[in-house]
Image 1 (spheres, one colour):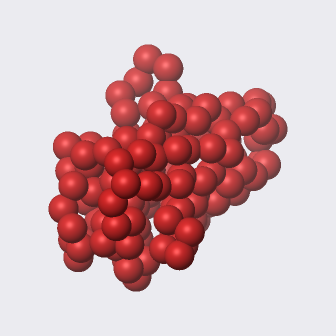
Image 2 (cartoon, rainbow, N blue to C red):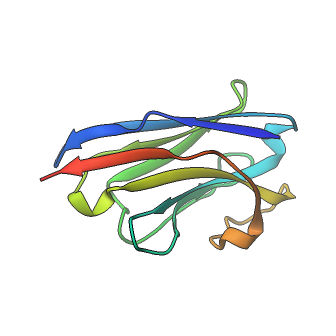
Length: 126
């Protein structure tokens, strides 16, 4: 299984970015997907997740109302639209695939995800 994240970059505070994560190697549409991030010197944290059908999403409190996760099962891709970016959003963002097939809920702990992308750096300047 391979996950390829892209879309990171440098943006000013208040700006927007859209991250993409293309998956291959197993039936993408059967697995929930998540985005995590890790800022320098900080622990990795859950950002957003979407269940296998796209009908359930979950967000960290810090990004609610600003970030939107979505998926296109025909393209085997999950997206993270990030609006109203803040300097505190600066981090390496990772996409990950749930280890359990067709889980109904979205889980937030990294141990529930078994495959990870390589990460894409998002830098928000003030």
